[in-house]
Image (cartoon, rainbow, N blue to C red; front, side, top):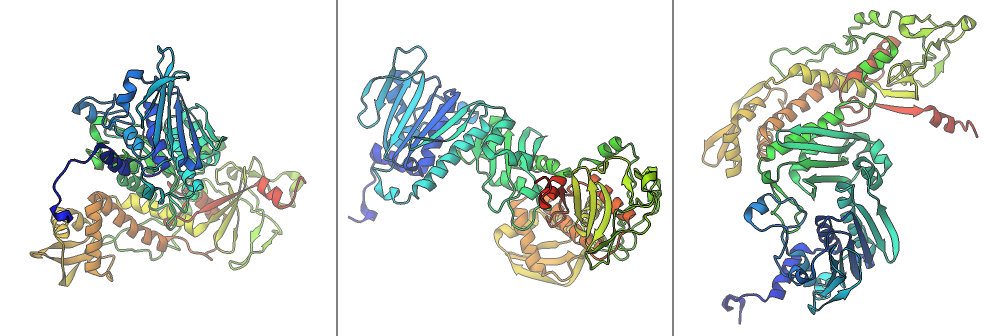
Length: 626
């Protein structure tokens, strides 16, 4: 009989469970995730996971939670049986990890499963075998043990899709790691083939992150704390310098539940837009707390996806919190350094002052290279501090000792001891008075060398100045609208219904970008203007790209990103160029401006602006102390 003529029939329970298992149980790590969820919901303070053959042959999850009464063990194996919700209102405000009541039944349909559990008031533990349903006495302390053997034995075709034992083990470890990061008060232990391979004892949230991701992550990250509306963000975000080739260290949690959410990922990634180089991926651990009623966790059988009632609010909260954490340079803020040094804050001396002429948003950087405006520096730098070495030619790398160094003044923090009247000058105090130190010389026409308390600072002067100019331009331009260039002949194109709807709904945002895109006839859009700053851009391709982005991202963000890209181009052209010889005064002014500029550790393209070489590293390089 062909499938077209088969009668409608009710599927047997076992087949229904196996179909459900296809959604819930993808691989051994899926089983580990579901069983650890149950252990945490039971109030466990210690969870132990024992694996064999990467979890394919055996998975045992033990906890010290409240346990399951013996009379409820048979019910625990039934589909859609749970103690966690009882009504729609419970579902809409669910706060537990599990709630669907189908994991154990789904697992039992594709593997051999047994549960042993004991409550605090029970004389002994009870054990039930899912295949036979037999209930018998067992020995164990309070808590629950779930044993799963021969995963997919009942569906051998699915077993063929599993990877090597090592790969499956890695996925199981990652499943436990995700739980460990968000529940620092709970201890986790993982064994494989009888050997202890991972253990995390109960700890503070900060220590748990260090234990799971390593001390290096703590060093190369910053804490995040922020609130936007009803959304609270906390955790840690990796520095741009610590970005990775793969997105394998990105952990996001909503109300304690690990999720993979495009909205959260996009919000975090957008905060790194102009500080990451190329396709590098940021690292982060983000905890998002929101009222349960404002998020739907019943979206996917694995509970790894969620849907927010106000997605824009969550996106903005994530982006702003991460941006705030990344804004401060690795060098301490200038005000704190100035307080330590007892020196006044230097003026904004190094930067060319951006000026905008009509039409707006057209780069005007002529003369930027010669307009450094250093006349105000006399307040702080009455005389240039005598460099330890004089720089050679711009295209060279040699340094020549000065025949007669210029005298330094107390305003510079330098003095010349009488015993060294004919030699090089020495600092009156430690050379790290300023976070990025005091300028020594220029190398190869491209780098500024400075000395601070840690050792040697090397600054890419073009990259550093580019970031400074960029941040100043952003602050000066504010919310100005981009100038539009009318087209003599409108460019038309056949548009999809989604493109037409977006053009009509986002007309204001398009206008702010210098684009006039409107329906000409059903299914046809006409582009009547494009940004004046992009005179060579294909108007149709540009319009389509902007419409696609407006359909995915909030309009204000698209407008802001476009503005920033144009300003980044202006900053690149307006920054000091390589082979431009700077005086020591100019170098010091550049260092001071870097110390007070947000995101000064990277240029607009994500390249580093400075590097620290410590005295210890220099000693190692020259084999000192060996």
